Length: 224
Image (cartoon, rainbow, N blue to C red; front, side, top):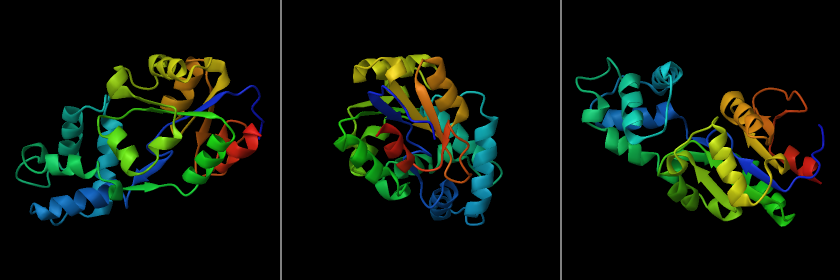
């Protein structure tokens, strides 16, 4: 692993990097759908359909209407009416609840170690208005000096604008900021275009240094 020099701040993606849906998107969808009469949609089926619908989206700005369209596509053919006309509001609110999410085990220890070292920490996330309250309820918000969300900035990753906004809030030059995320396109490419350093986290595959890490704990080694 290549050590990072002259680093003043680290920013993190949220979904897939700090937290993930729990037990999965499909499990949450199936639970709520069953209460509304759709009982044959298994979590596994809904995970597949959600993944396909997500991949088919050409652009996604994380607005409520876009989420409704994505959920409708996921449930296409599974009910008499689309979720946007029935249970979508309940489903949307469900993902604002902390027990619908799992904080990865390496997150809190790493954030505590980095914060104790004096490192400035931030979030750069493509998300909606539910993120800040969710981070508060997960007790993660206190670790961060800046939380930059696409719905507030008006630009989503990989646009360099959202990264530039974070750099300004952190008071650090882009080249002195490391961004960590789980998307090659949104996080690594976006950060690189904005002049940030970057790391891709992939907890499932063996790391391919220097740009890929398997655990956030590796950041503790890099910055010391």
